[in-house]
Image (tube, rainbow, N blue to C red):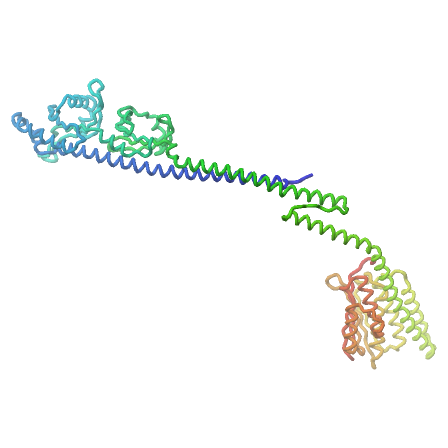
Length: 592
């Protein structure tokens, strides 16, 4: 059963992720550019609307200044404040000339009229002016009575071709006490909206953008679309911008970006509508180019991915099938891969590895059985040889001891020696090569009893072996030859009495350590160096000294049984004594 996705599936997933990342980046960059362009266009439109607002306020201020100039001229104030008809008749011509001069100074003013407190009119020069005054009185009577200045619009479709825009300013006397200014009348200025049309036409943001100036009744005062002037603007479009300064709205059969600016002084609005497609005209080419690049890159990725997957997965599939076949069936079959790339090199190396494995296996098969048998025979022969070297030597010494005592003394010590020797022989000929440490210690004690009788208590013995190791196991006849060396080569040659101390304990690291310490003659430095060298390489040279034969035998037996990290170490000084250290692993069961 397969677990996880195959290499082919992972490569396909990688191609898919790469394609998705390309289109995601395209969409992200387009959205970023669109947002940036929209923000830039908003700033640009806001600047245009600000300019229109400033020019509109300047325009209205000029109208207001004309009304103030007319209202607070001293002659006009004198004219309106006089109740003498003869005096007023004299001033009438001068008043009209003053108003005509103010009117001529501003080409956007259509008429300037004065209405005194009795309702008499000065400055009306045509029937249109009287129609306007009548409509103002009809529509704005209450507002006029409040003695406030205001801008307004009147329109009577029966008598007027188009609406009239005006500014009303109440006139108060400046000749009396400022705290008790009397009302003299009203100044009405009718102005033209043509200037507003030119103002709007000069500030077009895009070719099809639309800019409107709306009055307080949502009537279009001015627009860059002449056909829409004096018509009613759709108020529902502005509902979306009551709580926001920006909005999108469908108007004039297209989606537009809308901005609204309030003119508080006039209670008018400036409305800008820019087609969204014109805002992004410059981006459309970038977007199309980006999508084309994305499509081309996607096709290239798929084509290159297809060939890459074929060039990787097919050879790898062949290698996997071949390896599975060899692993299950073996044989001399080799893989043929004509490729010269890394996969071809891999196939070649696999073939070389199989050749080497076959060669190694053949050699191993040929030599394995015979080598194993030879090793077993060699170990058995070496163990038998080493053990055979110990027993005759010990037997000879023991018999010599018995002969000397028997001839010299003819006493009961012979019985003790004979008993101890019998125990030792019985112990040595046991078939079990691995014994308890307690049995090996008992063998040492029997041997030391014989030596004690022979040398007439020339040396004393101290055995300090921990009880915890007595039930552990050790190769047979390992400790006795070391004790024999200490007696014959160390203590026997000493003129006075000597001491042999035998210690046994467990060290850290699962190791049992024995120490054989005598205060005999010691070993000459040259002989000690030679003996250490032979011990380090388990030398089986037959020309070594008598002392060395027993120690070399023990060294080889230990290393054959436990490995080279275990064995014997010797420390000695002439006339000061010798210490032999033996280390073996802790063995609680028999050794194979």
